[in-house]
Length: 192
Image 1 (tube, rainbow, N blue to C red):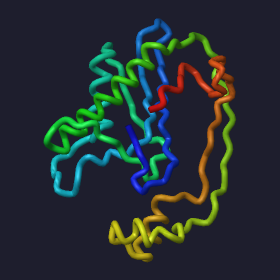
Image 2: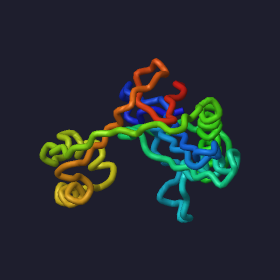
Image 3: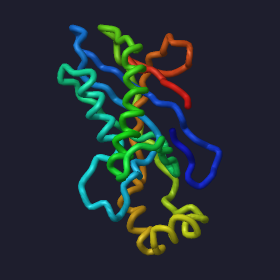
Image 4: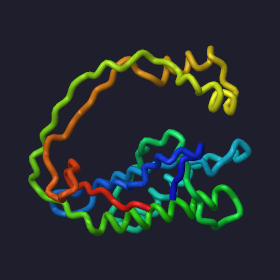
């Protein structure tokens, strides 16, 4: 369902879902993590759209019901892009089909994920200084040319988008699912 658009063999193809229920068992929130840029729309598509993640969110909210809130967050996207499985003549229709496919996979994981009540949530946090902000040496040959970026523009973009440090919060409760993941009502999903 996703690929590296520059041909690199590294592809993150795990869908991660975190399910959070109210103490009475009613669904509250679902967080979906998937690695694929919402790139079905192009510069010619002038309508506002949430892309495939927006379609995925709306489908899951409708299927699960009970006023649940579904949120999407990016995986390590980099050059990861979706592989559309057909359907639709417009970019919007293709995004809808892809969003629905991701929603179906996420719903299967949701239905097989059980939460626990009264889980003690422990965590550690600390500030990490990041390396000096700089553009990858080959970026101007690939993305710089593709996106018509100059070194001056990249300096401004890096200053806005790349912090000097970051705040990390690490959960400290070990999963019993045997996969070595950390969780509270989370599960690592499928591989495609």
